[in-house]
Image (cartoon, rainbow, N blue to C red):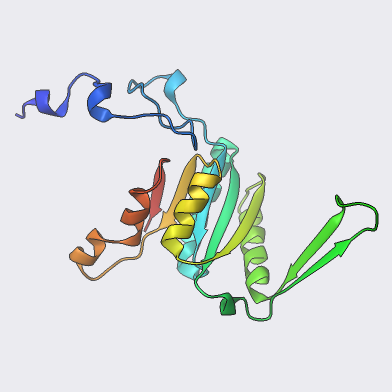
Length: 187
């Protein structure tokens, strides 16, 4: 039998140090389980590395979106601009109006993302699905987007590593340490 005093049998908000964040209302200072404290998830950020293995992340995100009604935002970080081979951006402005600017982006990376969105729809996601591409360091860009986007949940893919030591310093761990919203890590 263990001594529960140190583990905190009774809720102790000072020990837990849970504070609501500007980014999300999911984290609550109240640690009791009740209908009033069940979080509402309305916007989910999904990270996508473009590999087929990340489709599992989409399956979980679609399931959560169907359950909660949450919007899905897909984020793909490109480490180099060259990865957008063959992509082009076109802008059309209607004379006399700044509001009617049409932008069209074309290329393989866009087609791949549109295909993922289509598969999410086919899997039953009827909620809003959008995507963004950013260029830079994946860890930094994911943290920046999480803080700027008013998300309620971040869904990441974890890569199985051959060394427990490398896993200790994994990308997911670094991201979790720098965001203030719940994170779902999918293997």
